[in-house]
Amino acid sequence: MAKTSWWRTFFPARLGVLCLLGGGMVPGAVAAAPLAEDPVRLQQRVAGLFAGRYASPSCQVQPNPDGLAPVAGDLRITPDGQIVVGPEHMALFDPAGAFSFTLDLQARQLYLEVSTDERLARLASTDDSFREAGVEIGRGSGQVSQGRRCGDLDLREARIVAQPEAAGSLFAELYDTGGRTVQGLCHTGRRSGGRDREARFSVTSQAVVLNGRALPWQAPGQALRVVSLGSQLADQQVNGGVEWGDGANFHVERRLGPGAPFVSFSFNEDGTEWVCQPRP
Image 1 (spheres, rainbow, N blue to C red):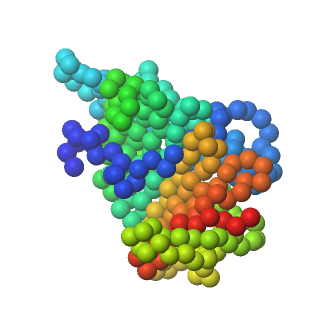
Image 2 (cartoon, rainbow, N blue to C red):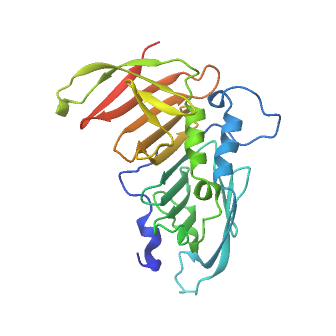
Image 3 (cartoon, helix red, strand yellow):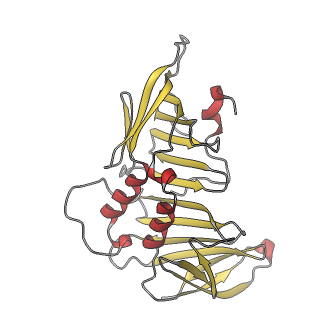
């Protein structure tokens, strides 16, 4: 990929935006509640995956009508969830915004997006080495029209890259079913015949068990390939997805806060996509 066009390749359409994990970060004691019942602790865990300072030899203003040469700069992501590039800054967990990330371990790619009605921050690493990432941040919808861009960022020290199992662990803790099995009624779209069926799942620190089949977080020949997570304040729900190297996948949506009920789940089985509503 040409280094002059990295910002044009952010977020393949298939990834989309999963959707902020509640209000802004606030100080205070960490409660012992399950992670899905504690949005502040969840925000801290997510920010910790990305926190760090990442130098760039090539930063420039946007727009750049005078053709100013790129200058050295950096991207900072703070432990409390602030994204900072020069004078531009944006909160990972802006109450008026949306947040999502996708880590593709097989393709060795990482995507992070935060957006509000007027501002946008995107970070993408698509070169499989995590050493030539790009970030754009500023005003705009869909793309940054006024702000900053930096390229050739080395993200190898970010925890989500250096310890990718941390993303899977976060997913497992967030969607842990507490030893119970969640059952639901599922259906397919009209293109698949509009069929119905029952399905069930449970999530632990060892595996997702989907319809009786164990999908471990770490196992020879069945490695976890993709972890995605995202949310927005408007619905107070957090969406997540995981895919394994053999093609198995599982997507789930859970409400944040007291009780943290599951809202929906879905999976693809033998080429058919099933969308399910959990039973009370």
